[in-house]
Every structure is written in C-alpha cells, then in structure tokens.
Image (cartoon, rainbow, N blue to C red; front, side, top):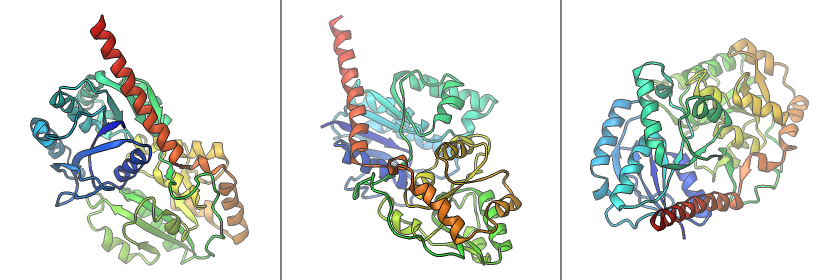
Length: 390
C-alpha cells in the first residue's frame, strides 16, 4: 500500500480533510503533518492524528515564515517514529520547503509531489519580494516530480509564464466528492420555491467586495433576493463580519458545515451559487475554478460568475450560469431582475442537463489519483536503481 506523507498548511482546513478522504478512498496509507489555524492541536482528521507543527495565523506571512523555519529545524523530531514514505506530497509553497527537509530526515529519495491550488499574491509581485519568492519556488521545485493544480489558468498565467516548475503537470479540479452515492447520478427533486430567491455563498468567506455587493443588491431588491452564507469567514478581512451581517436585513450567516456530508442539504436550500471572488482581483481570483462552482452545480444551484474570468469561460463552454458583465449592483440587478419560476427552471435545467461527472468525482477518481502517485513513486525507484547500476 502506497504510503503518502501529506504536508499541509492547515490541518483544520476543510479542503485538506476532503483531500485526505480522497487519498484514503483511493487506497493510500497516510501520515498527515502540518500547521494549524486553531488554538489547540487538531486531534483527528478522518481517523488520522496529525503531526502538529504548530500554529500559524491567517494573513500573517512573516509569522508563517518563522513557523516554517522553526518546523524545519525540528522536523526530524516531529516525524520520529513515522515510517519512511513512498511519496511526500506538499500542499502550498511553505510546505514544499518542509518537504525537502522531511526527505533528509528520513534519509529518503522519496519523490516530492507539489500540490498548488492557489497562486498567492506575493509571488506575483514585480519587486524583490516577488522575484525572491519565485526564485525560492524554482529552487525547491528542482526535486518535484509532479505538480498538481486545479485550474488551467494557473498553468498558463503563472507556472508556464514564469517557468516555475519543470515537472509534469496534472489538473485535479475542485470537484464535489461523491463517495456515498454514484457521482454519475443526477440530482432529483424540485428546487425550493421563490421568491425570495436565495443566493448561496459557501466556503472560505474572504472577499469584502462580494459581501458589500450582495448586501447592496439584496437591500435594493426589497426582499425578493436573500444571500445565505456558510463556512469560515476570514476575520482578518472582515473584522466585524458578524456585526455587519446582523445589520443587513437580507443577509444570513448560517455557520460551518461538513464537506461532503452536508453539501446536498445546504445547496438544496438556495437557488443560485455565488462563484465570484475579488479577493486577489486580476490574479488568483481571476484564474481559479473554485470549489463552490462544482458544488453548486452538482446539486442544481445556478452559478453566478464574473465575466472575463476562468470560471466564466468554463461556464460558457458548458452553456450554463449567469455571467455579470461588471462587478456592480446595477449589473447584478440587470442579470437577475424579472426572475420568475419559469425562467429559473430553464437556468436550473441547463445545469442539471450536464453530465454530473462534470461537477463531481467518485471512488474511481480517488483510485486514479492514488495510481498517479504510485506511478511517480515507481518511476522514482526505477530511476534510483538505474543510477546505482550505472
């Protein structure tokens, strides 16, 4: 059984849990190690007790650099007793740095797989900070045998543009994980009635502009539209998130949820899915294909996207969704005004008419992911044997 050492930036991140579920469902044996954004160590992630590398703070890059340096100095002690892995999988740049130290700690030639699902704004700067970080990534990437990323725009606009990683690249989209059901099975049942028409904004809530736009639009609609938010709000971006939401008559924050267990239920209560992010406008936010895009469409919510983004391009190819021409209340009103049950049913039917595998992955996809990692491990062992023989 393939043994994967999975190094992550935040063991409390729901997206990390989902990847752990995928790797286990695909047949891998896992050791999970990483930082956390919680006050206390995380005791369990899908039956695994993570190796705790200490706390980090959201949005505090200097603090995170210090935490990485500290963890690098003690990585041998942290991983004491852990069997040598077949593959080291590093999620994000800071964990790529630790991957090299982990290999040294094991005295191992285990290949490194780099999982990069966001392009941080700092690496895109034109100053010494950006140039330096890209240089560090290129240096660390010399030992990378496979790059996993979630959007073709990340490849075009960053990895190829800056010649960052000289390794094979595989696209692993942020699809909804369907293990309990058949991912090819379409959603059944009617949508909830409207009005009010509900826009669901679920996941990592970090975009101030989206919050303001939804607040002004729903307020102007005088109750015909509501915005329902669930997930983890970034309190570094929204210092008074809960107070702001409470002051808005048509905004609701419904707390956290479990992914994938709760997804059908929460999307079944909304009509539209907010697939817009201005957090790193014209950079990562323009290039990404977010989790909520796939989740919402899987369960019949009509996606709302911003024009001239990778998300909008993707939806245009599928022939579904509502695309805003510009990020304004007026454009949102223009796109959604006059909504009727008949018009909504046309929009929803277009989503449901697509092959469900467009939006979701199942156990076969999990096995394919692990098989991909097994090939990397096998090729690395063969290369090492060939080098010794030579």
